[in-house]
Amino acid sequence: TLYLDLYIVSPTHIIIDPEDFLLHLVEKVNTYTDIGESVPATLTYEILSQWPPIEKNDRGYVFDSHPRNIDDLRQFETFLSDRGATLEAVVCLKVGEDELLGRLNRRAYVEGREDESLDVVERRIAVFEEQTKPLLDILEAKVDVYTVNGELPADVVWEEVKALLSPIKEKLS
Image (cartoon, rainbow, N blue to C red):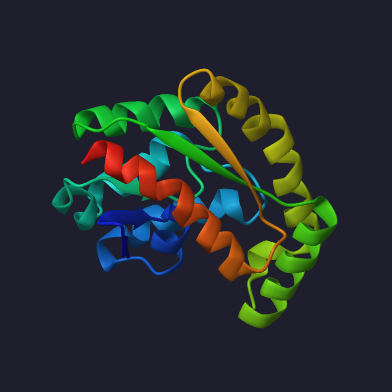
């Protein structure tokens, strides 16, 4: 997907609907996601480095849900550097635990996702608290970190995210 001439990369969507050449790696990913654990950074970036659109776009990227922990950040910075890119900003969607549980429960029911049982979702929330929250402090020392109320309706959240990304894209142009 393109927005503001930036390619939006969602490793989760790549994994949910993978190209045939990635299937063997996705099986490895599922061993982690099925129990609510973070996917090791080396595996995530092995997938991203083989995904063709990453190499085709020299205008910039918006990464959805990455980096997720300190090891992931190291891999992410190397990944960007290898492509002549840098991390410019982070947008963090803030959603309370009750809302998160409700949304993921609905998504599990509607989409039939086995990786979103209550136990797995609770583990994911714990992993976020243990691994991702501390990462935000590190990122704040490096780049602007913007927080958006993720409990608002999706279209309102998207408008806020676009408003944050527009000046960043202009600065990079």
